[in-house]
Image (cartoon, rainbow, N blue to C red; front, side, top):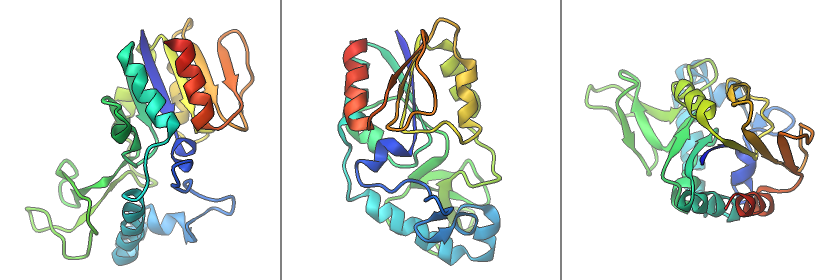
Length: 223
């Protein structure tokens, strides 16, 4: 069975990674547009680089939780693709081998000159760190106002899936939120969220709980 898994911040929150932004619109005390937009980077690249350096350092201290591990185990019996809005590598560390990162990856950097020039990066990224073309490197993150390059690939995966698991995301952020519109008419949807934004029906099974307890239940059903 082909299974598409759509994950968001709620999956990683239980590993200790803070969700994208708080109710006041701030991200770790920063205006998101100052640290997550091309304009913010152009105005103050040092602040932006330091912000992601802190996120990167924190990521290297945390571990996958039961939700990540359960999703990885699904691969034993099914064709599974994880489509995540998260920029961490916790799905990969848990053992998932087919992960699409819609919003980029924190442990990668890319050239400001050639966006296709991407490299692994686990250390701090500083002003003066240059690509082979002598241009500044930046975090490999999709910022506000930028294209989401993997969205078409993700759409094709969702269109072909026999089952969809949605976990840790309110599905309010576009274009990711629009992916559900592409599901096959007979594809069953499993929605895991402590405060679900959708109701259960014949096509949708809701688990109103955290990812670390809800996802293993979904995986048990699908085994």
